[in-house]
Image 1: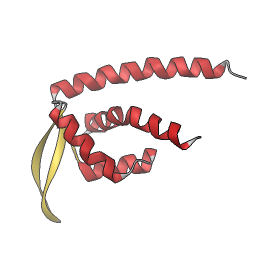
Image 2 (image 1 turned 45 degrees about the horizontal axis):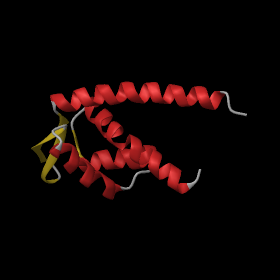
Image 3 (image 1 turned 60 degrees about the horizontal axis):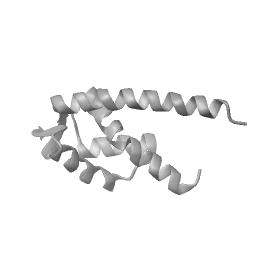
Length: 108
């Protein structure tokens, strides 16, 4: 796959992936970054600006939790607006990916 296309595809679903992970459980940024790096090959540096943006948009909020192995960690959790956005984005992704699969299925 050409590199530019892969990067654009990843950027297009990054918000959805982060919201999906947070819908499963609260998490800290490094944990989210590690999961995204393993699953879709996103770099760690991408996550911090994204988390600040999601917080500024009111989709996530933070809280501190003591860590047994060092300083307190900043955890992220979905807000009600974040849950609503995740539900909406997930539905849109489902419709879009079905349409793409239909088109690709007919390609020769």
